[in-house]
Image (cartoon, rainbow, N blue to C red; front, side, top):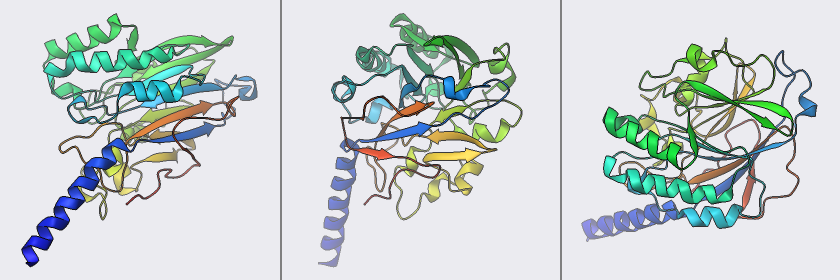
Length: 299
């Protein structure tokens, strides 16, 4: 009888954990830009809305892309940022590209920017090149230790894509090489542990993913302990500061391993750099972030 109750309890827990993968949470974060040598008058920077997705993991993804499009179709999205781990298997390249292409129906004014994560590098070099080529074909800018400068309401924005730190592919010097001395700086990367190496590289905001908020965060995400110093600092999700500069760790949209989540949820984040957005968000319920871990502890 005891074994039966135990098996039934585990089955119910598994069902709940699977259902959690459909319960996407939308966070809204506003970052006030600070004055710096490269940004003398941050108050003049027009608010920039960034829709941030990470860790799509096509193999274990429960969120329909058109749901995201519907939720944000009435919003002003200036830039779509995808910070790595789109897939694990090359057979899912068409699925990943189609997913991103549907998201691009939001028509972000400055474009869609992608960086790769450690799971993307499971692909062979040939298949990874195919993924990059296909993303570029549909209009994405795939940044591999490089930057792109765009103009946002007459002001310069430098989008700096730094390759995956966990697989030792990040090259900060190359990524920041020739970045103009003036203008706002947004860094996109997969593994947020990169911030620990960025003391000599100026930026205004950094977006990352990688940890999935623990994914199975019960009772604690002990399995993350080997994933770098930030985990030991209890920085696995949400908004944080390091060396006086803000960075954000998304819980990710998909799952790795099993398609389940406990005390974590799939996440979409709308970031506003430089001020308060002109209109309140009107999609999935909003959580407002502060300079601390933003995602609530969930059952």
